[in-house]
Amino acid sequence: MGETAVSEAALDDAFADDITFQATDGYSLGATLYLPRGARTHAVLINSATAVPRKIYRGFASYLASRGCAVLTYDYRGTGDSRPKADPLSGRSNALVGFKASMTDWAALDVTAAVNWMRERYKTMPLAFVGHSFGGQALGLIPNNSEVSRALLIAAQAGTWRLMTPPEGYRIYALMKFVGAPLARFIGYAPGRIGLGYDLPRDVFLEWAGWVTSDRYFFDDSKLRALVNFPRYRGELRALSFSDDPWATRAAVEMLCAGFTSIKPEIDSIRPIEAGSKKVGHFGFFRPEHRDTLWRGAAEWIQMPD
Image 1 (cartoon, rainbow, N blue to C red):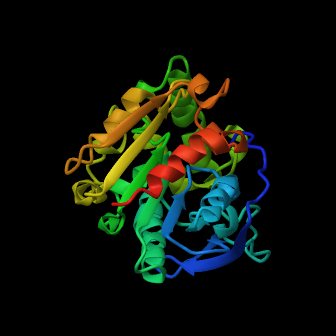
Image 2 (cartoon, rainbow, N blue to C red):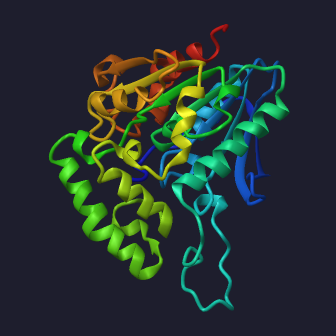
């Protein structure tokens, strides 16, 4: 769960500027815009995994920018630079206590706004959507996914514990249901120290835990109206699955991709040895060691003519 050690990559020859933009409800989101020093040919939005700050994607974003892409990374509300500021007068030890946010909000308010921001700023360029784990799941939940021409999903899955590699699925089920959920309700947020990597807002964690402990992840959530947006996506879709990833197994990736009923997603199962590596897992795609293998293949696909 959460962030693993992804070593910092030296930035390519590209501009990087920390900015903010507004979610659809006006909430300010921290972001970084990467721009090539030469001609711009494509716009790319990188959408984070749960409890993973945008800095993890800086090497890959810079690499894409060096190839002519305008790239935006950002933090969902309640995380990274989009976390609420502590109010010393509130008497709360953590600013996330009482902060209202859910994963449904991340998709409807934050991801939707990020797509709009890129589409409005780069009107004439093809817009590609890179989604890591939850970031890929969100593609099917946003109402404006028709603005995206290509979507590259990286270790994005229907994250039910039942499709995780044993015994990891049992560990995650216990963590979610018997540790994380009671603790989040009691203290008002989910602390990163339980194995998440970073703190999460209470309702983000509780909604996530409900999905993870369901048989079909959020496809079993009768209250999740945003599921109607899955068929609206009609662009190209390529989903990468890594054989040593215990969370985004091939079956879990297939379940997520099955939700995109208007297209035929391409699913690539990759063994670490095929990427010249001993390990990739759930986070390893973004390590700079994959610059000339996984990164190059991803960039070439993103920049294919439509």
